[in-house]
Length: 267
Image (cartoon, rainbow, N blue to C red; front, top):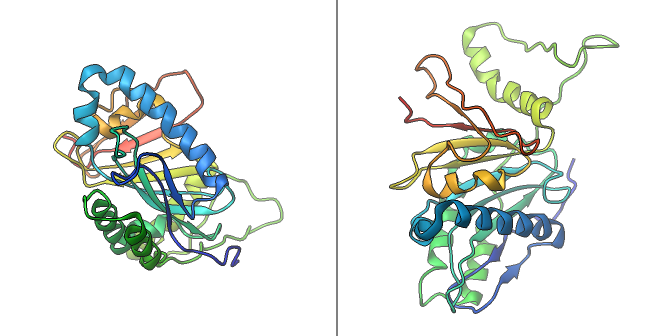
């Protein structure tokens, strides 16, 4: 289903050249929930990190993300989130985001790093003193959309199938492994309904990590994206794949958000 013809990336947030927010090709259906979430998350992280907040914020990593439809409008989204600041010293992240068809296979985008790498490089140029908004905007438009494919659809094997009983055609272990992304996509739909995926190569404080959340990351746990302390907020932490049983941190019960972090460097 080609439900959106314009897949031109846009951006929203702060740039050092300007003294206020800047927005290009970021529709209201995206900006309203995104801005509210960021404001709540920044306020929570300031309260948790105290006088260390600014140094931690400025050295925090870039995060790549994808959003399913229903989180920020009816489109799916792919983008990056980067710490930034405006000309008068007010701190607020810069978001570079691209709308995608609602039936895009978002899990498949995890295996297509080139667009995200180019988006990160481009976002960093926006922090340079000689980069004008006009130049930055033209470069964002030229970035284009990530290569993506539509999700594989499933068909019930009977007239009244169980929602928690699935079959994948697989004649060998290799085919099972190839089917895992499709299985993960369907499992996330069942578990979270509308969800976001986040991943980062990390920083001095934050280990490389992959996150999955019902909706957007909980504001109470946002400080972990800056500082790497996953014991804060509503995070269930899983051990590095292949290193035995997962360990679990009991989540807070303050809201219904479910969030998981996988630390590839965890012991």
